[in-house]
Image: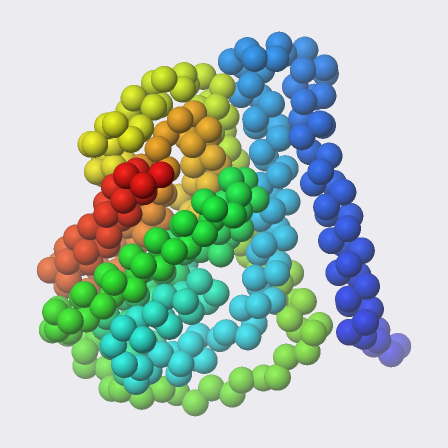
Length: 345
């Protein structure tokens, strides 16, 4: 029996347009559906604590999951153009600061999670990428996450997403540049330094549209299936904040007038373990209750970029002094971001 004939590019385009239209129609029905289910079907009073919390949960769960699935699929296709080998070649031999900037930008679209920190670090060392440039990549990849950016855009608007993108890239670029200028290569673990510079020959296949669609589909299976419990947990926390936490209370402990709120948010965020998709619903609820933007951004950045599990993983390749410097420089950048935006917004 002959194999199934692959779709043409025009057929893929038609399917994409039809799918996008159907996705948009469903997405626009989520708010009225959540109001109907919470207040008509379940009979919860409008304005009550429980009613507001349940309506938030019913609305945000499918909304975030729909956004997440779409984002992961599209980015999975985009990432098929950026293999780790190609990324290392682009960064090797780059001049200071320019290399930090390119590394941070590549970190946004390159496959990365905490578990891949060590293999990526080793690959960059082998390719001769400078330490500061490598760290700019490792900071930007989890923190300036494309999933977080699009979710922030979908939930809070383009201004908040643009602020997060700009400040996140700034922290990654400057932190990597500062660490690079301090000549800390001797604080990389000895077994890493002994690796010979060079790169194995990797044959990169030319991918078809069908291959890239398969990459997107695989990304949905790999990422959405893995993170959905964190997303639902984050939405649950957000729902409790939305329904039960008074605005005056949140404004008091996370408002502009509480100078200590930014360092406190960073200290609270570091021990937490969450991905970008799981923390965004919490951010949405905090901002909705009157928390200051700078404080919330500092909290989100610390959870994603300075999480304790990632530091434990990086300890395999970095000595304690370099780990401490990494935390200090990145933490200082996050604190500066928080104070700055609390001051100007």
